[in-house]
Amino acid sequence: MLRYYSRFTLIAGAMVFALFYFSCGSNDPSHEAHVSVQIDDYTYQYLPGTKAEIPVVVSVSGKKSWSGPVKMVVRQGKEILTEATENISVGSDTEKSVIIPIVLPDSLGTYEMVAEIIQPSGAPFLSRRLIEIVKKLRKAEI
Image (cartoon, rainbow, N blue to C red; front, side):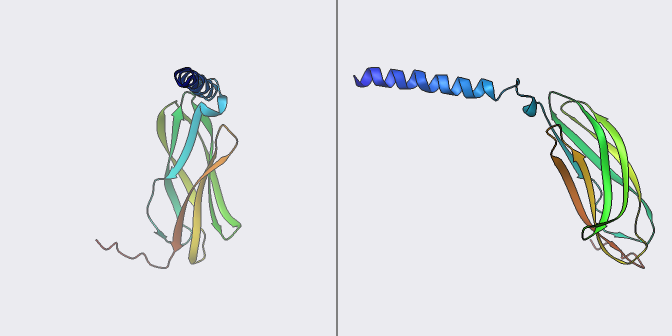
């Protein structure tokens, strides 16, 4: 009896695994692509009113390519002070860089720079950096 039960358990376990594996596999459109964005600039100080050219990398992991807008905003709290958008197309299982020109605020202070894309699932993906608008740039200390 124990031997029969063990075989049954193994077969049932294999069937459950196969059902789960194939139901979550390549036929599910939500698993076909994951898209992410990253601000690829680590400058944290800018002069007031600067037109900055911010490099952004969009990565796609999955079987489908992705194309759409990359939105860049500079905000203080929830208030969006400036924004820019660039369209980009990225092939499957690859990444692509795009430069987004954006005019920074005129007032001194600390701001949040945010790059945003919308994934195929409809969920947003964000990359964030804190930046400072200063009167005079400080030299980097190494």
